[in-house]
Length: 47
Image 1 (tube, rainbow, N blue to C red):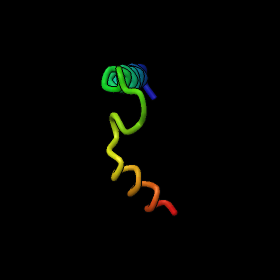
Image 2: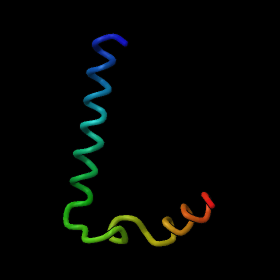
Image 3: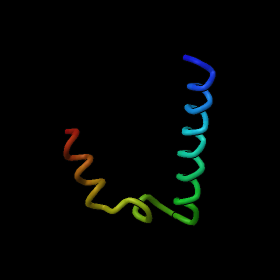
Image 4: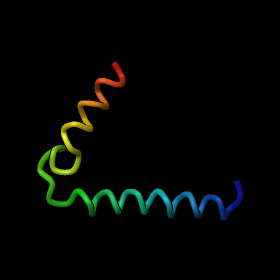
């Protein structure tokens, strides 16, 4: 991979982490930012 590819990869990963931290700020538990039906479908799909 070229230097440009590494820079884009690092910037993208940093953006994902920062955005996730910002969106979940103030959340006390999983239900605050992921609806219960999404979790149940996810669990049922992988059994």
